[in-house]
Image (cartoon, rainbow, N blue to C red; front, side, top):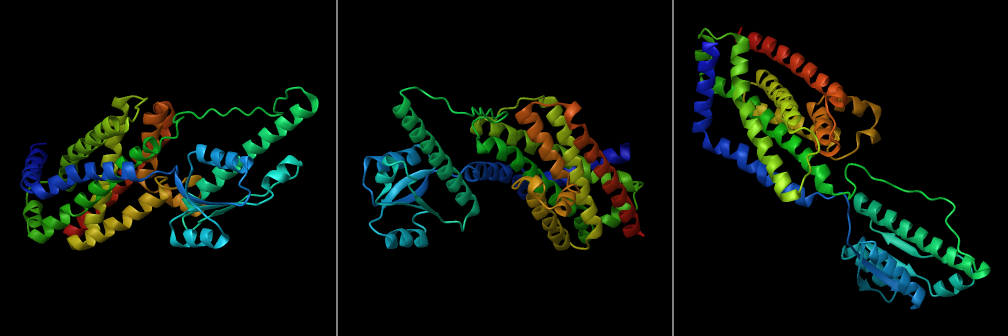
Length: 374
């Protein structure tokens, strides 16, 4: 125990001397959380829109007002011909083009279908999906309104819609993107810093010639690895605390579950990330190699963990690959505790997965490090 304590003191002194790394571990995550928290928004609204209204009637203006009221379309430009619509879409000034035919009102009055063309710049698929969904929703609502008014005019009676579908969104009823993204950004920040810092820990000792000095001490292999992990657990806790404070104070992030449970399970993820970093350090010969291997972990963590894209939509093979990443399970823990308020009775599978990951990776790291010494 005294041997491990001495190594921990040495690591904390080394950490204190390397002030630039310490600033990167604390200040940069705050900046990343603020920038990405505000910048990443999956609910794309206020799309610049150009309208070519050939009808110039009250009905066409009502339809435009309904589109604008949805919040997805900002009618910034007015076109006088098709070419102007095309030019604005090609230049990127407009993301959506609305073309209303000259017989729009006449068709509605005579009970015929009136076609409205909605041209969407689909080079950005997320923007295009938001625009298409909003336009379809507005079209359906306006059609229902016209049909109900027509039925009332014919019979003089009021009618209810045949289907009354009542939607109740739980956990994030206002669809605030920050509530979904901020926990994910916290997981990404911890992954980046914990894996990268520890991946270079043992390699740095080797390059500086101090690894041999540690080897000749009475330290055992597992004590040396624990000595490299434990100090950064506290750094990870500091990062998580600062990130949660920023989420609560800046983004009004609600924490519906147990804060103690959140911290307890965060420790498992921090240790899992640090273990992965130690494994990388035992496989690397230089700090550059360790950094390159760390970046090889970051991109799959972002793309396959469910941070950016729903895992349910991924092919089965990539879904399985996502299960090899600790961030996959930590995101489920974060969103489960913060947004849903669930406990261990729901999250026990994710906890078990992190414990298995830590056990396997640490065991491999100790074996690889012993071979590296030999």
